[in-house]
Image 1 (cartoon, rainbow, N blue to C red):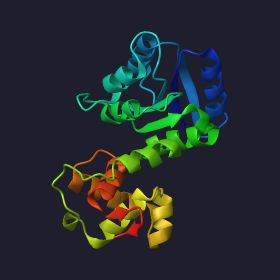
Image 2: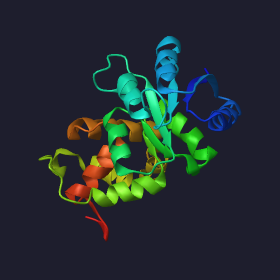
Image 3: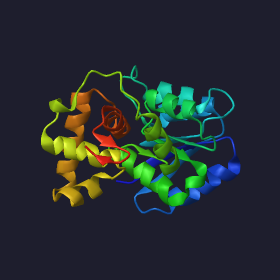
Length: 219
């Protein structure tokens, strides 16, 4: 079935561009557009789209609050929200992910990454613009406050965590380890559960902060 996407952005030109990209895909289409956060919240609750693409700075509630209301931990029936913004600020990245976002893209990342983010959200993955990921992981190399050590993971799970920290997708991890993409996804789910993190970004951050992966190479 076709993935149903809601586009929320206060700029009509951006909404039109996103609609053109999404509607050009054989497996997804735009079901509605919203010009402000309040309208986006109402339409999302009415239509229950598969994925919401949300700008951060909009009239009414902003994209971060919209994300929290639609995808936050307190929501019993969360929606998938991908934040798409011009503003490359760490505070926005952390707030979006903490609010339940399953993606954080910069608008300059281009149409290919936008489509990949929607597909990743549907697959249960998290896609973050490469420019943001590199900086985020650099900051997360500091010692982690978590007491979880890597001996809670099996050797194969440690291998998967290392590859996640290097930025590989599930398909790339599967090819690297000669396993199926489904098996790689299952390993990742187990790792997230054992570490108590929400997504692959949390796994990558833990791998860097715990020393499982270093700037000079893998441990």
